[in-house]
Image 1 (cartoon, helix red, strand yellow):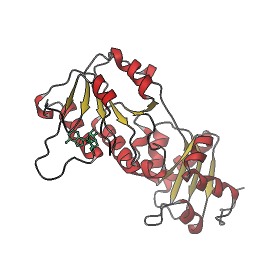
Image 2: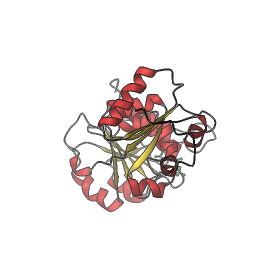
Image 3: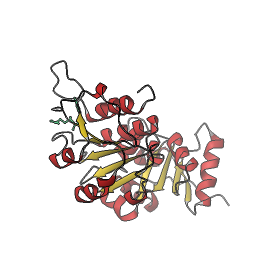
Image 4: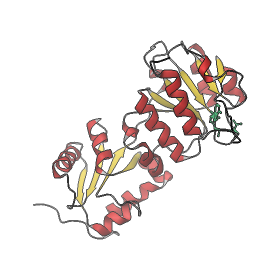
Length: 267
Ligand code: SAM
């Protein structure tokens, strides 16, 4: 027998899913929310564990929905048919989605990175605060084909709704590492390629260098920039020229420029 659609936003499962908007709850459950069929499909195709899928029957792509529902069942999860009212509660107000997925979070371990593999490049972010920046950077890392993001010290949550939304599905394909400054200092000691810092004060123009791979690119905090500790670890630091009156670039824009300049084959 097909279960009845959930029509009340105060249903306990819906409340539990909604609570994943809170960092505390995400931490306790190790789950996170994904909005929209396209992003849910990314998670399914990359084999992430799908705990819940909530969907409206008005969805156009019924075959894709069926595939996701069947995958959710295979994961031992629950597929929930819901109405507009419930979706409005679970989804963003300005662009409500017909499908919401709840997946398990994945964090990777630094010791599993091969520091000698010249084909694998990583980006470190120090105390990044803005979820939109983090999501945009994860999406850019995916786009260029780099291999992971290393979050140093207290950063915003990579699995927050805002970050996941900004990744546009890339949250599933970019491995995420979390570490402290002290751990990172020890771990990065025998990195085989260049460790490149980014600072406004550097005398090295980003166009002047050809990095030795594998690359470890270090980006600083939105307000404070790259700390002295991380600058000390760098093979060298690079600067993107600031020719107008703006004193710096937005962090995600700077990361995108550095990645394409340093990793694309025309270098
Ligand atoms: N007031 C900060 C400072 O003095 O570094 C500005 C931080 S900036 C908004 C955030 C990060 O973006 C920097 O730490 C650096 O990684 C990168 N960034 C921004 N503009 C840059 C530039 N022109 N050259 C190199 N890195 C830049």
